[in-house]
Length: 326
Image 1 (cartoon, rainbow, N blue to C red):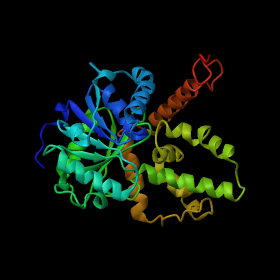
Image 2 (tube, rainbow, N blue to C red):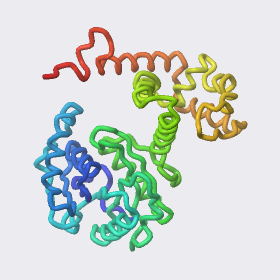
Image 3 (cartoon, rainbow, N blue to C red):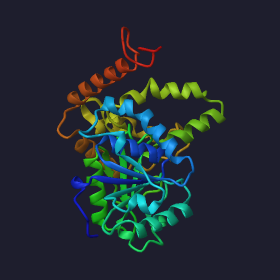
């Protein structure tokens, strides 16, 4: 792929599809100071999009706007071709229908200037299945966000079998420049990473409701008042590493590894062989990045207290959902 400009030089972004996800992307890119052109085939798309951006803007102001950021830098075009004619990056956010995605990406490939990367917001389809009819599939990548894209930092980037590696690298650099937290995946995985984890929790929750083991309220409280507080600071792997005390993940696996055979979930546990054991321990060491267990405990504790205070769950908290309510 011959790129038209470096990721840091992008000034104009096109967003194709302006629903909840596409509109969230529009708001995010505007807040980061880009000129944004948008297109959506729905007859009321422009009015809905502008309402969404205006509703998101107060939150974006709190996060901090980039110099020059303005809602006035949004242009809604009458055609797809107009939207992408001068784009330096394209974000597609059409509904999750494979035939529609495939057709739209093919049209975008034909209409977008050569060398411009085109990313899909798909939440599950592999790019390999979507790029089959494109003339230049090498520039097509997945840029999977989380709702709302203007608020949740994560985006997962991965190419398909016919995607150029340079396009994946370029997209990851662009998203980072645009203020996102990026996971660049080495290979396609159905549902990507975060959705796989979300889905596992969701399915187990449905099992528990269906069998009468827990209520919806029980399940939500079990996360918001339990592990969810820790996950906001560090993910499940480092969180479990701290369960091993000074021995870290190795001690945790030695102590709790046998419970993988216990019927705590409907998911089948992998065999905790030496390769998996070593990979998890080494991965936690890498993630700790030089921080000791004591450092991580202090970081976790401070973070959880901050979350509790921010959500009004500590005595005397002046913030949270009820604070300032009218």
